[in-house]
Image (cartoon, rainbow, N blue to C red; front, side, top):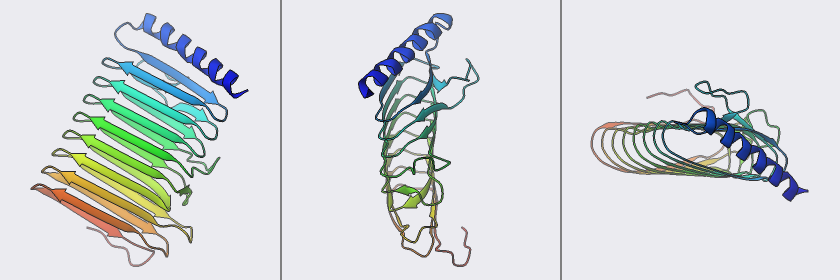
Length: 246
């Protein structure tokens, strides 16, 4: 049953790619709405102005793609400039691999915002080579991103990286090489078992780091190794005590 489902999804996606490419020869666009467990989905686009979006999106007006199911694997490889990947994914035990090469790309991904599956036991890997890219990853609600393993490898300048995670023993590893990069991380959770770990290894000047960990009545850990001059670093850890700010 699973193999049949995967074949149907693959054929539907391929048909969409061919249809859109004919209408818009300068850009490639993939429209996706998939449901079902144990799906294995791969997207690869080369060129400028490419788009991965939902079925309700149209050229120039994208909407988030919709993937529903447990134990899914998604691989995205976008090579070029001004490409966009927008996704809403409802999944448990989800594996996501995202590889972007180019500049001025946009990546916005939300994992299980309504707690349909729990958003736990996920493995997410984001690899970026290029400048002036914008990346946003949001996972879980109310401390449901249990055992998330999130890894970032970013090489380039003027990138903006934002991660919002409802942590429950979640880890956020960031390896960033380049100047004028901005990192915003918000990890919070209300579960008694909540606790998050963040590791940031950075090389480059004029950085901007805003890190906030807020596990309720539990322990959080953060380690930052940064080499370079200029910029600002703000780290806040708060377990429901007095509100602080930088």
